[in-house]
Image (tube, rainbow, N blue to C red; front, top):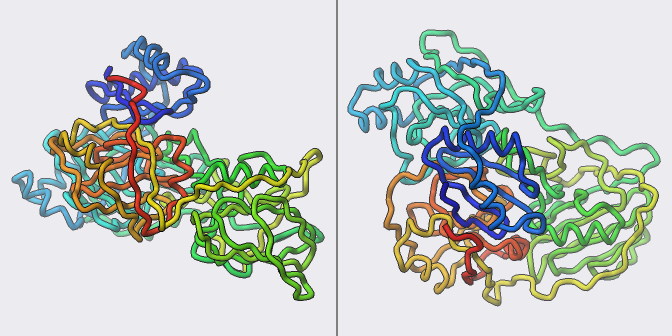
Length: 525
């Protein structure tokens, strides 16, 4: 085993091959190490996320390093057939790369069984190993911005099916109507690790109408006589977010959750909720709601104006980071922030909305969770539990990012810093990076005058990625993964934003400038 630093709370274990990776995964699932929170297997690596307060990094390395690589996970395997129409836009290109005809590509792809090795990238996306050994092709040099749902692709020695429309760099050879992800099923992901899969050429078969996946649970109507927030304006983006949904890696689901966890926790503290209760995460202001019934709310996060308007038309400004008592007809409006970009609205009791996979977080990449909040929505509020004590006003943060000042973020080099030139890490930290308008909850896209150059141009087998990872595609312009990042990725990660600066990163405005400050890696390989 080779241990590579990822962050202050994560380490990547590199092994010789997929069987060793799955053996270590089976061992750690059978006999867990106290303090380990998440395991994300990939082709030759296992990403381990842990709580530093429960176990030190060096002790984790010692315990994992003692594990046998002979273990195997016991499960009842299934055999699943997936009908494919082999009309993918890359089929001819793949045939050319392999020096065979498109028809031969189809014959080889349908001529062998595959095994679900692991899941990642997106909910329901399974990496399928096995198949004909010649079907080994590189990812596309420039990923597509949109690949349709059901697309069947190749990347390296793996095959896979995109569960939904998303960006991606796999070579697309066909499409299937079989739903890979369906929340109406007891287990939403069709393919689970260990399952056997066979692709079937559907060209000669009649085409079935695609089966639509069940929509996410709708928002319930407010209970008669209860309290609710009536949304009058939602701004650029308003989402329900809580502490996230960790522990769903087996289905290819990342944690998601609030971009600024400290602000979420502060908002809940002020209204007497549990710290990870769902709040409304509001990007860039422009949000307005009316209170139906009586409620206690709090607004934290970005620094911007908050205005209360009573039913009789009287209005005045209110400070953030304090409990606010509202009566029926009161309206609160959040203006454009002058520092930071995301505000958090908590209500005493929390929102009475059905969770999805145990969380109210809306994952914008995976499309899991409640729908984006829109004008006209009614957000019902749960009855207040006994003992929900409202907190005292708190001091707002004074160092929120702005476009006027350069934002400095600590980073932990690795795990793939050695894939870059000797000057690349120095360049990453020496030059200022602009935050582009393409940035969102999935990732912050950065632009610098000089791109980061690689010395290793080999195809990187897909491996787990953590929030804060700075992934570098072939363009050399880095992407900082945020709350809704894919669970696995195929481009090298040169460094990660340190855990103590992740909330700060979640508040960086578009067009701000970012500079990285390197820290000592917690683990030496």
